[in-house]
Length: 296
Image (cartoon, rainbow, N blue to C red; front, top):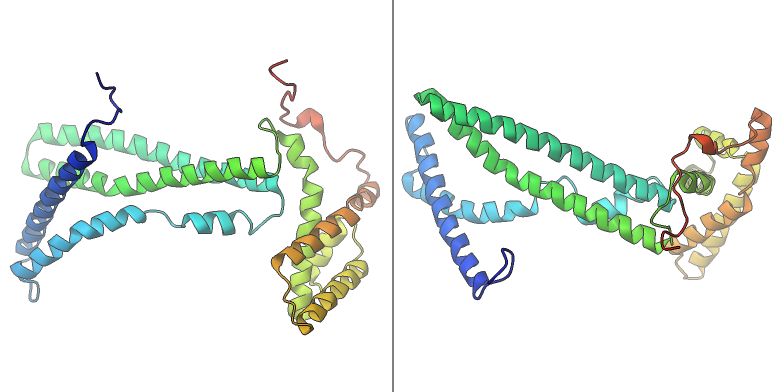
């Protein structure tokens, strides 16, 4: 006895046959629909029945290719731009994955209830039975079919960000039960790197750190002229490499940012003292996990 999802002999072949039959039915339905549209406007000046048949035939491939679309970004863009554009912090990347997943999950929930409501309307329209009601039902059914690829794509994006979440967590040795305190502790490191990253771009582009990034550096206890000297020295060292025919890679920049985070890790404490803040992380108001080993 075979289970519902157990593969049967020749299942792939049979499935392909079913797909081909469905494609043929869809092609015929599309052609008839196009013909009805053509007739409803009293015929078209350029598109003849023969041309219409060619268009309908090619729509089968268009429908297949549409399975690759339906989302605004590719997996590559989502993982290399969405997850690095704003941060060096793995915890921030994890939180961004969670945010992206929640957005798609909310969209799916909204789509689900819209479809359930629409199904009730469709049933009512068919039961009513007049020409306009039946037409409304058919229109709603057609729209539901068109939404399938967008629903499929939303699930694909959720899966992509779930995989990215797991890989980022494992790559940075972050425990499964990480919590808000872990994320808060990593924030100083993130902001120092981000302030130097943006300031480095300023100096490369304009020769000076811009006002916004001057403020950003000071907020984390870094003197503007100190940062300017360090960044200019770093740029000069990279220029020497280039002049020697050695092209710096982005890893050189990452190493520089890591050094800055280590060098200025405690600089924010001077700002805290100036403001009058004793404890930066208020643990009583954080979501904390019990980190004890459950197996003990």
